[in-house]
Image 1: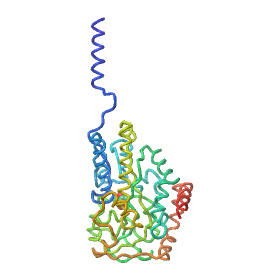
Image 2: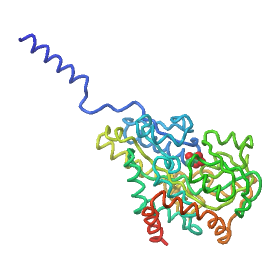
Image 3: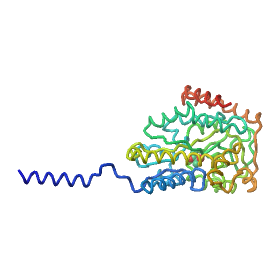
Image 4: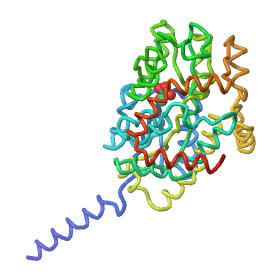
Length: 357
Ligand code: X2X
């Protein structure tokens, strides 16, 4: 009997030694990023990782994996890997998650969020902070991923190697690389182009080899990717925007102490501000540059169009009438996808935008 008690006590003591009171943290948390480390997106991810390590005094070490390494190049499969825990954190795009979360197609509705002139960023901010943003966040969380904060890839501009594009007819037959997301295929078909699905991981080689004639991406991606080496023409049409989402696997999130969760949220606030400013610098009313100056983190290039022109690109800026021609051509896509996304969400976004115009 005594011997039994002693054995039991020893067993209990041993158990107490090997099972700590709180779950142990991982040595490294994997953060999924689609493009390379020098893009606005990549720099934002690295900054987040750096400040988390610093502010948690090394308790939480996040490592960004660039170039969709964590999903073997398949950027539209990454949401499922984050949900099931193969990926811990992500700074990811609404486009890449839209196959799983249909509400995230909202910013891809053609010519929806781009108002005129420089106010288009206000429209985006209003949606992020407003009812529509909340509905998108809820949709992500209902699908099993914890949202932490917004970032931004940016308004997506069209580049190609063939000719200046100023009217839908200029796009006739142009082979355009797009992400594997159905709304993009619909939009480019409606414009008379020939869209081709391709992961970003393979895109540069395709530009180099002339497998496609063009593509669409924001400045924060285009300049670091040296798009000017492959494409001579760029059209500033702001036809869609791509907000980014900082997110985490819910079980990983729960494993952190409340103190560390608070530090992580503080870091998200800083990283979101920095990353969004990097994506917008030189494209907005000057607010982005002011943020970067205040943070002491001004990048080398603060005037993207000047930089592209210096590299030999020819920029086509569209007038209101020219924009209207593109808008008209894509109206059926807007109507089809508004139903798909949910009329209620589209209406909420319209109200959010109206509140700042
Ligand atoms: O693939 C793209 O075009 C990119 C890098 O912008 C996204 O991941 C949405």
